[in-house]
Image (cartoon, rainbow, N blue to C red; front, side):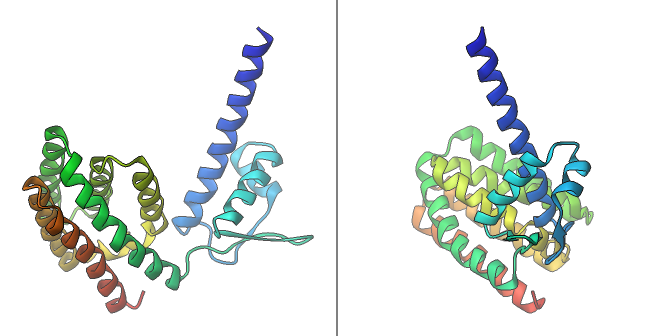
Amino acid sequence: MEELNLQKEIGDRYSLRARVYNTIRDKILSGTYHENEELRENTLATELGVSRTPVREALRQLELEGLVSIIPNKGASVTGITTKDIHDIYMIRSYLEGLCAKWACENITNEQIEALEENLYLSDFHARRSHFDQIVDLDNKFHDLIYKASGSKILNHVLSDFHQYVERVRKITLSRPLRVEQTRKEHAAIVEAIKKRDSDLAEALANKHMMNTIENLTEQGL
């Protein structure tokens, strides 16, 4: 019984720490906490309804990710994602997304193909009605489906993290009707290549999709 209670206590502590970490991280990536904004442990603890310990642990983890800077005797502040970081992430993603699409050709199931086709249909539906919140959600889902179809949990994890890092920028780019239409066509071409099990074409198209996004960011001055 004592062992079970100990395991539960450890599990609860880990769950709380993860919740605090994910909440602060999401607010940094979404822009709720701005670059150079001070992150006071007491304020965050009160805001999240927790003690200072899980907040301190979360800030240390976020420092390792480069999202927070901690200066001894001064405290923590938001480092955030810089313009260079964004371009670096998309350049790295261009290679990894290509690899992901290539592996998806080898591992994707019929159910996953059907899910991708439904995603394309819904994206077209909402694009015609300028439902930009739904478009962003469907874009998230599209890439998530490809990541899972690759059959690699490592690639899935890495790309999912990168995808979250640029969430705020993606919302800006996907608010432009022209880019939405381009994205829809690029997604459709990737799905068609995967359905045909043409791994070289799928890799090239997924890579190009990311490069087009970099070009779009440059045009917008991001």
